[in-house]
Length: 417
Ligand code: NAD
Image (tube, rainbow, N blue to C red):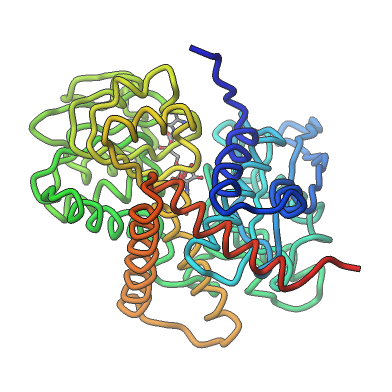
């Protein structure tokens, strides 16, 4: 078997190229759409609690702004690289277009393990990073949001740093803020809620009952942890869940509430008593109906795809499945609900938050939820229909829809100057 290239940006470009081929895009458009529009790399000096000065590396990449301002999260993780941020930024372009949101795609990241920093260090790191990327962000320019190991507090610090520098409060510069500070009700659960809505549709298509279905969830943070609770409410049986320390497996079903309480207490899964402890790799290969990768990229690859038994794979994470794995899963009749569709609930409610900030008029949670459901179901149905027409996977179909929209916007705008 040929060796698989696991560089996330190369993978993102391969996914784009497949759609460009189906859409018969001209070579010029392909060049424009496959590369990031703007990349900023910054050094972030931080005074640590013990008086030392550390310098961290950070990035902000804007992949495309043809359909509106760049939009995308900020990740704090030791594994962040420029190519990972480029990939995540381009996935945001396609995700926003897939949901028909008036945004382009961006992403940011800092190479850091935030679990090793105190709150004070985290705040200083965040504020200095915000100040370094300040020239390229703004409510109408590029709007960050939370991603892995960042949260509403991180967004509050960025909003404050931006506002203090500009001299007036700019709520719309970030989304995923606390509700008491211009955030939207429902944003905290939106990513998982979106996955739940499209999973319900995919289950209907596969004639699989979500109630009683067995589910394995890799990653137990904002996306995965919340998803476990929501699917539990739908009477699905969460038989396995993992965090970065270990996986837990109980064929009789895990209790998401107990797992949350454990994580809230700051403890890793490997210290959770009761269920069998398994590895993240074993979790992916369990004999379950539904698998939800909800952590990081490159989890299902050419090396393990053939061992994945789940009927439906719902990508709450970005980039968990490689193109080689995709081909294997498609051939074996598995349904992969691709990241740019499955986890788009987060950016959709981020869009709602931004709209609410601009109009200074805030919605009740049921309104957010209804609008999110409408958006997710519509996008899923459009992608599923496209997949039928092209006899292709949902991923290829989602890219055909998204790339088609961005290419159209680019064509209509024309080339400046
Ligand atoms: P988070 O920081 O809230 O949680 C991350 C979780 O992943 C933690 O439980 C952590 O223990 C676990 N994890 C880390 N490394 C792991 C590993 N090697 N194996 C297994 N688990 C591991 O992050 P999040 O916001 O839930 O993001 C998770 C994924 O969802 C990312 O791919 C992110 O880009 C994607 N996503 C998040 C949002 C959002 O709104 N937060 C929206 C769309 C997509």
